[in-house]
Image (cartoon, rainbow, N blue to C red; front, side):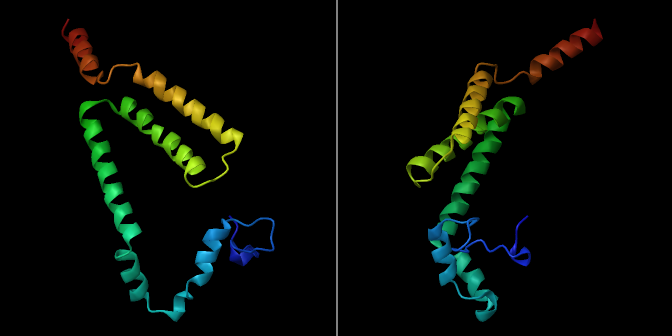
Length: 140
C-alpha cells in the first residue's frame, strides 16, 4: 500500500502516480489541517453535510430492500442479482461522472450482466424443495 511514509502523496501533481482526480485534490487542498480545527467541527460538518445525509438515507433504503429480498428469494439468487449494481455504477461513472472506463472493466461488466441473466432464469426459491425431498428420502 502506498502512503505518505513511503514518499507517496495522493495529490502530488508532479508525480506520474497521482492517485486522485485533480478535482478531488483541489478539494483536499482547501481543507484545513486536522490539528488546526477542533475534531468536533469535523464531526458536526460530517453529520450535517447534505451529501452525507442523502448517502446515509440511500444506504439505509438499499439495506432494507436487500433484507426484504432475502425474505422471498434464496441467497444464491439474491446476491448475484444484487451484483447488477456494479453495472449501474460503471455506467454512471462513465456517462455522468465522465470517468474513462477501460476495456477490461467493460468486459467485467459484460461478465456480470451475463451472470445476472443466467441466475435470473432460475427459480427464486428452492430451499423448500430441498427440504421436502430430504424428508421424502428420510421417511421413505
